[in-house]
Length: 352
Image (cartoon, rainbow, N blue to C red; front, side, top):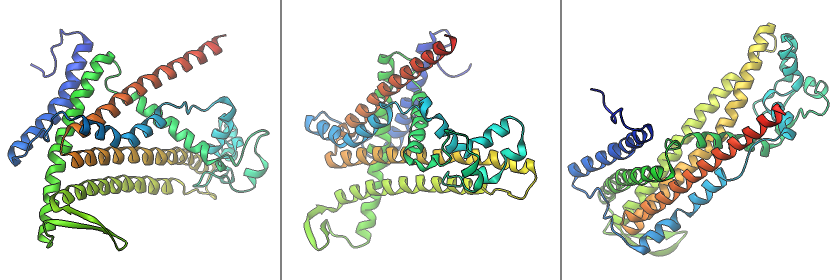
């Protein structure tokens, strides 16, 4: 017998049960098991408190604003910007036209290729650009960011595993998934990390309280265990930043390897260089996407950690995370509907 929901159930119900098991059962079970072995509360002192819930929502305000900025505007590139975007990826538009026509030696002219920052170089960039085209299109950094945000928006729109469910069923998945995440990462993971940091502070000679001072000014004292929990949140943020930074550096090194152009090679080698340059240009958009995604992930972790440490009540980060994820699901559905509407209008225009 295979695992998973019974095959005789309706497909949407099968999908719902699968998501509840994947996001709720696995993470929740892991949280309970680790908490049992370490003798801590897997629910993080979860109880209703309107003050704690409001604090959690307020703490998540930056993430809510960031999500709205990423998902609500339409970053789609219009026809008026199409030549500029093509120049951003290919440099001199004449190169692309020659390559399409089969004139490899002209298409692969290294002077027509954009450099690492996307700008064209050499006389070909100045003299062979088609009328109305922008050979210095990459001089517009806002357009490059806009293209990256459009790609990221599309990725986020299609990354919703519950998009095929009804809104009510997806909300059930959000509630279970967020609860399991907060149990594992905040109630268990952050608590254990805070205890580890506390022990290291005591070993380093700290007393039962830590004096908070900066630039010669003293702002008061904080109990060492509480200070250790905030330090654990800061450590999580540093690890997240380091992880995304390392990934961005690897991506950048890959781009440098792709951008070694053979100016004296054969026509086929120059054509390969042009293709590599296209990949590198796409990769530069990935760097922007990578950075934005890193900011969002680190912000979410820090906001949840601060809300939990400040209240000692899992209800605070739970409320903030649930609001963020619920709104993000709404944004994903809205963005998908907008994309379908634009595609339908485009097909109607072509058929007309």
